[in-house]
Amino acid sequence: MKVYSRFMESLRSSRFTVSGEIDPPKDANPAEVVEQVEALREHVVAANVTDNPIGDVIMCTLATCVIMQQHGLEPIYQATCRDRNRIALQSDVIGAAALGIRNVLALTGDHPRMGKSRDAKPVFDLDSVLLTRTLSTLRSGRNLSGEELAHAPEFHIGVGLSPGVEPIEAEIIKLEKKIEAGAEFVQTQCIYDEKVLERLREETSHLDVPILPGIAPLRSLGMAKFMLANVPGISIPDEVMRRLESSRDLKETAIDIAAELVSAAKDYGFPGVHIMPVGMHMHVGEIIERSGVR
Amino acid sequence: MIHTRHKPLEEILQMLSGATKVAVLGCGGCVAFYRTGGAAQVRELAEKLGEHLQVVSLGVSNRQCYLCREEELSGLRDAERIRKIARELEGFDRLEEVEAVLSLACGVGVQNLAGLLELPVYPAQNTLFMGRRRVEGDFDIELCVGCGDCVLGYTGGICPVTRCSKSLMNGPCGGVFNGLCEVSRATGEEIPCAWVEIYRRLKKLGRLEELRRIREPRSHAASGIPRRVKVQEGAG
Ligand code: SF4
Ligand code: SF4
Image (cartoon, rainbow over all chains, first blue to last red; front, side, top):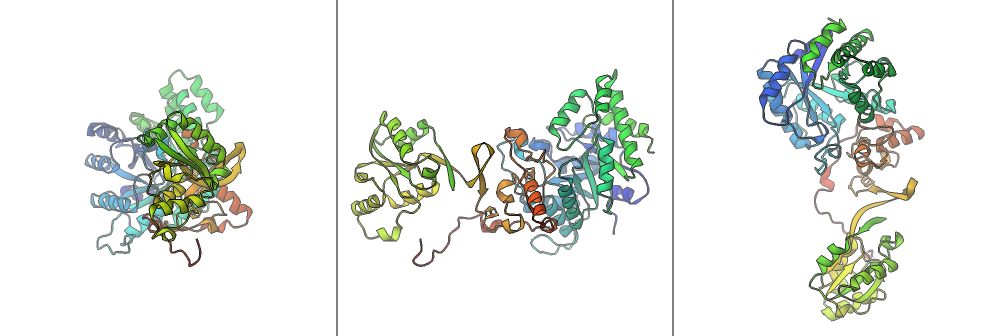
């Protein structure tokens, strides 16, 4: 199997791989992307670019990825099924590949009812399994209409996983289908509980694909409570809540907690982590350093 | 069954503006069954409209979607047409006098009637969905959107096209929350996740292998254009 990206090269090596995440701005200011790129560049191999989470309009994934490349950070292009049918999705990722984007993450996407564009038409022509297979088909040199592509797009295909959802069996069956459809790496939703890491390890031990647990620093007790109420399947141990509650320096506590999870992920044998900095881009280096994984 | 909901009176009056004599017509089908467009609702609406215009005739047809076909009327002059239609509309005798008809049927009934009459026919209701299956709290739920490519055979008899908010084909998305669909958090309603229901049902039936199979993308060629079917001779 060919390696097209630094990210995949790192996953195939014995190095502990850390991916990050860029939050595109809602306006047309490239400097906001550049600032995040500069904060992450030395610390992560590649970083995801979100596709209008919960349907709130932000700078498009493709433009953000290109800005990242211009500033030396490898992008992982997140494609969701929410706004684009199979025509637009194929067209977009072919364009992305032509611009040198070498990692694509296939996601279902949130329902538009979840955000500020609640009246928008939900598309979902494909789902994450079918988008994954579509990416594989394109890479093998055909499009969904069966036409041959003389120059097939070259990228690695990733998928998401929500480790805490019930029933977990249904989630794992879906992951198995994504792998059958061609998924080469997995990044998960945020995990705050080592027990969830442990369970994830057990549930996926039969799968031969690198899984990067998602880790996002908890900036405040308010954020922790918000996540508990809004992120499906999330669990935050009481002890973590207590540490946030009694913290004298929230930033330090957030970095500590995230660093401990990164090192736990390594201890459980995961090949890396996916850090979603949620505004703490400046501190990602610190999180990795304190975790001692390098 | 078809579910409907009354339009606001202001909107109905707006549609009827210009007409002084109107007929109000209920339907004996789904809307009578659900008491949104049967005899009592016709009387109620006629009473309210009576304060603003003259309601000359009111009644409940058998089912507005059953009404006679265009070909049975062809060659008939308008007055005869109206009489023939009126005969099918039980208790609906003075159709010849009115300037407009207000129908409490679903969108199918309204369009069927409108296609048969020269008079303007207006909808008194918004047509919501096809559904049944009473669940807790006396809710009937939407069950089918008529997608033209039925997958119920692979999903334990639970329709993901209709009952998964994203019409997904290959299992639950990451948004499922305590067995509820993610949109429940936005709407405040408890909408079950169709894929959790499908998973549980298939597991119970010992047919989880259906869930393990990658299902093809649905063909929208079966539903994206105005559809028609050839009706068998002697039927319908
Ligand atoms: S799959 Fe669903 S929407 Fe399509 S025909 Fe069957 S029940 Fe109706
Ligand atoms: S939560 Fe369940 S019903 Fe809702 S969109 Fe996801 S899979 Fe569909």
